[in-house]
Image (cartoon, rainbow, N blue to C red):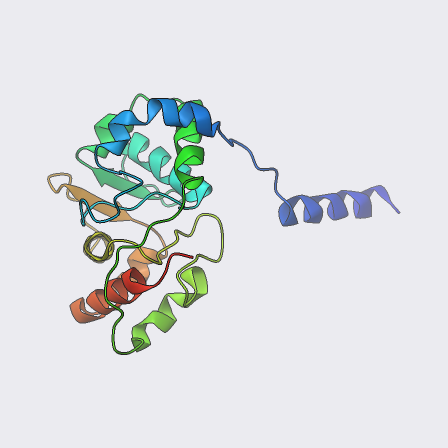
Amino acid sequence: MSYRIFFLTAMILALANPVRAGEGDAAAGKRKAAPCLECHNAGDAIKYPSIPILAGQSRAYLAHQMYAFRRSGQGRGVSPTKEFRHHAIMDQLVIALTDREIADFATFFAAQACRDSRANMPARVPLIVNRCAACHNHEGRGNYSRAPKLAGQNRLYLLNQLQAFFRSAGGVIDWTLEIDRHHRIMTRQMGMVSERDMGDIAAYYAALPCQ
């Protein structure tokens, strides 16, 4: 095997089996998580319907979102290569976290048993969900590590996020709003759907069992 072939083979294997960098310590995350549990109580999925259920969520996704909040808190704007996510409270809570602390929090919440929103299942599967399935699949489990698990998530939370992506499709980030988001795929997708479609998507995924 030539050096070039060996190098290309190694690169392919590395991409197919990436090193799981940044994994945290769940026990350390639990010790520091008391302020988080005021809102994201892992044992009470419906305490705050506009706040996301974090228990059982993808570790990589959770870490990625905390990095996005940290960038927003530091005043960094929209980047074409990074997700932008602004939340008036989360930006300030996450701004001073280290990479290690973010990894610990993400690992702690990901290790918890997932919780359902207990929403009622829609009478039909909305056709618009086919647009979501490539990344989130029809079961809402997520097809890759940075695609969030949507099954059993709070319906109002899902709807608020879809509406934030819809607003960002207009090309305007409004820092005066409590939440604002931009994602190169989600922003484009939500720019092509109706308010009713967004409601159908949120209701459908919220009603699915998380496991």
